[in-house]
Length: 286
Image 1: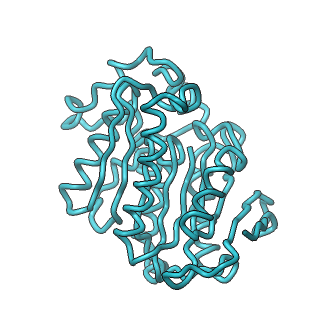
Image 2: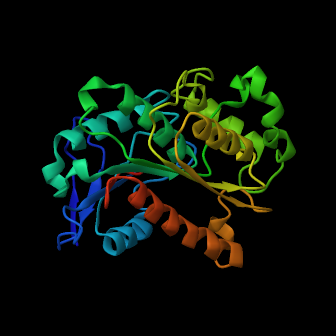
């Protein structure tokens, strides 16, 4: 596997390592995966998911992009989604860096705040006429944040109960979510904060969801999956009862943790099948 770093790809000097398997994929050109995953838009770096991404690169013959956007509060909203979109456009214009053929497919995904940015990115790419030749073919949304608590649409409030039901949940209680949004300086009703609020979700790529039952964010993920399905987007959903947001950080080896990790791989495989044979994969991390 070849490891490189596109740190100088633009003037902000943001690390953007990528991994490219040496052998060509037997299903034609190499595929591509990018990740973008700080915690709550404010913590973390490219090293947090390094092992997982290396395994995916080797096991599925994926070229991997691991993108580190600028963090809040020093770089408030909309820096994160704007950085991700700029990175996407850069690599879309330079596929040779990855030995990738994006016409074979391109998946974007992430966890928590990264899933939020992935959900935003698929809309931005869909709506940009200059990217019509680089369509995203799948999205991986793991424990996603999809609508600001202060921007719940009236018609959906009865479906969005988990923020209060799980307000005292371990790892990510409601108070911490509010703190992250405050640091992010998010505009609640802006779809770049709350992708559930985009006026249209039609024409989006297939979406794979992993949602935790004790997560304050649970219901927005369930609702978003339902909305996508209603407009014809293919979806696949896994729910993990009784465990909180990010439980793998403290309980990776329990039975449900092992299932969660295996389901993640199965979700990647499903998205690869749902796209255009063996695809390129761009992930956002959270």
